[in-house]
Each structure stands twice: as structure tokens, then as C-alpha cells.
Image (cartoon, rainbow, N blue to C red):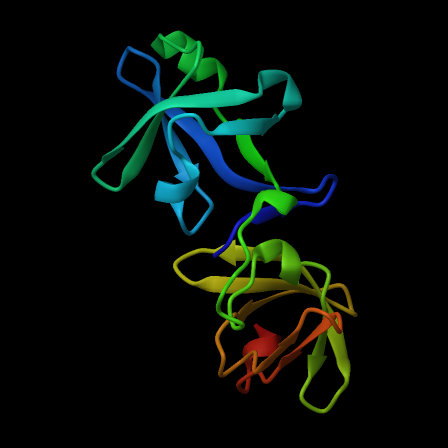
Length: 177
């Protein structure tokens, strides 16, 4: 399960409001959680970034093809929905369910971890996690470069959240890209 961490608070971003859909206040949502059917339910209340746009309470939702459409309390027109465009929907980290699988992590658990190579040398630090067709760790290397490392078991064999590090076994050439 993933969600993007807002490092300035103890919240995670679970969605971002996109363009309006239709004329009655429905809006598209860029989903940033693995379980949108559990997270985006009528009655759910989200803090927002910017905070002046919230909190927002979901009153309806539906899927239109592969796109989640939300209706929130007080938004009944296309113009009102447009005013919320690019608003991030936030939840408290404390409200996230425990993960049953020890090999699953929330993004906020990975950000900040030291990155080591298999020979124990320091490579850098995880500064973000991207989900562009696959999970990618964004690592700021000690020399200032930004590296993209696929977050798969063959390349990242060890994740020790409690210890504050993960181990990377990059295939030849990955770190030169």
C-alpha cells in the first residue's frame, strides 16, 4: 500500500483533485493510495493542502472507466469543482491501517532511509517514491545526483525501516544512468 508523505506534517497524500467532470460538481481524482475503494467512501473527511480548501467531506463517488470521480460536500457546480483543482487530499499517518505483509511499506516509511550498497558503502538517501508504471525509489546520492532505483526485491533485497536503511544491489550500469 502506498501513499505519499508530506514531510511537513504527520499526514500522507492519498489523492489530488484534478479537472471537473460534468457540470454538477464531480471532480476527477489522481489516486495515490493502493486501496481507493476503502479510502474514498461517502462520509470520509480529508484535510487538504492548501489547508484553506478543507476539510472536504466525500458525499459521493463512482468510477468512470479507470478514473475515480468524487463529489464533496458543498461543491455543486463545475466552477466550484474547478476551484479545488490541484488540492491534495490528506490523512493522518496514525489513521493508516497496519500492513499485514512484512514486505509492503508505505512511502513515508521509505523516505529518509539511508541507502547502502551490498558492500556496506553508503550510496545516499531515499528522498521520494514514484509510481510511474512501477515503484521507483528516488535517491539523492552522496555526490548530489538523483538516482531512480526500481523498488523490486532483486535490486532492493533488504529494507530495515527500524534500522533506518535499505540495501541496493544494482545491476551493472544502473547507477550511471
